[in-house]
Length: 216
Image 1 (cartoon, rainbow, N blue to C red):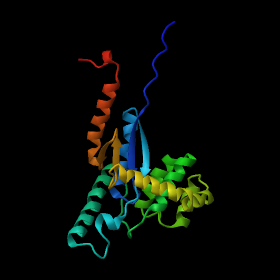
Image 2: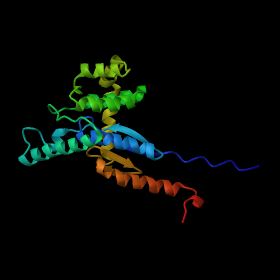
Image 3: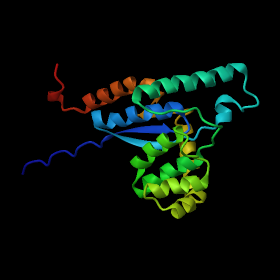
Image 4: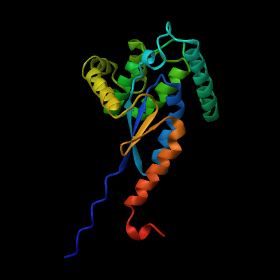
C-alpha cells in the first residue's frame, strides 16, 4: 500500500488589532488586508479599543508637548491617507469607540465583516458616522444587512463580555496601541512595520517548504 500524503500544515495567521477611531489604524487597514492577497496567510481582525486618556492623557491634563504630538499625528495620518485616496478629517471630539468594536465582533459573527470594516472606517473619518451613538450604529448595521436589535442585545450582553476578554488577551500578549500585528508570537506595531512582517511571513513559508524546493 502506498503511504497517504501528509496533511497540509495549517495556514499561517496574523492577528491584526485595530480601533476605528485611530487614524493610523485607518490608513494601515488596506495594506494589512493586502497581505492576505500577496501571501498565503489569514488576517484575524480583533478590536483593541484605545483608552485615549491613558494613551495621551485627558484633554484637561495634556501638556503642550502632548498637544504637539496630537497635531502631528493627524497631519501625518492625513498625509498617508491622501496617498491612498482616502478622506481623513480630524475628529470632532474624543470618541470612546467601544460600540464600533462591538460592531466588528457582531459583523464577524454574522458574516458581513469585510463590508462593516471598510464602511465603518470610511464613514467615521468622513464625519458621516458617530460611532458612540447607539442609534447611529444600529442604522449603520442595518444598512449593511445586520439586525440592529440583535446587535443591541449582543452589545449589552455577550458582546461586552467578549470584548473585555479580547482586550485582556491583547494586553497579555503585549499590545498597547494600534495597528498592532502579531505573527508567531512576534509583535509589529504600526503600519510602517509591515515590511518587517512580510519578511517574517516569507521566512516562515520558506521554513515550511519541502527541502528540495528551497533552492540553494
